[in-house]
Length: 97
Length: 180
Image (cartoon, rainbow over all chains, first blue to last red; front, side, top):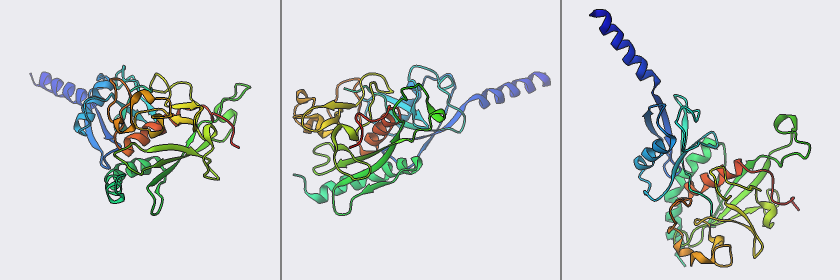
């Protein structure tokens, strides 16, 4: 039983370690906000959550950028190359006109 | 015309976020003394080399772009965004603009060559020159600037606009035309 508990705890910690702790800056706010996301979360969904936290109006197309590059909204954070501790910027990923 | 104190109040409210972004990017955001004008110098990739060499192999310097926003009547009207000569600070039409066939976010670039009257414009709802004689008389008066259609780029503060413009400059491919 003890082994099982230890194993469960180990798995739990391992799962926790996989989460991405990042800071997101919004261009209208000088202070960042911290987020903890699953690596499998889509960039689009992470950006939408961040946009809500920064009180952006819902008519935009939230996206994220990292080091001056826009991340693909259709892939997961992991696939987009987001790493633990990254600083991301909230952008609007709407199209040009 | 909006009274100057009203414009100043809007700008002062939005500047901290924009400055925070500029500081993180190592950029200097300047409000010209006594004038409702915002400036920042951006850099973008050089034009692709004809021989196909890129990056370090080519050793071409980054292109410098001097971006300016005229802010009179902001926020009743969107900023009047323009690119100037990076050395003389004169308006030089398309030569001031980055060339970019497609946005890094998909769809059309916001940098659009346009013959009359400026040579090129930032084509987005947050750009005053996109209206009237610009490419979008169909948008009505520039007071409509916050009324975007679904899927179009939305940027409603100076910081949001700057980030979008800078992102597209970073993904450009040289200038629209050689510097005069």
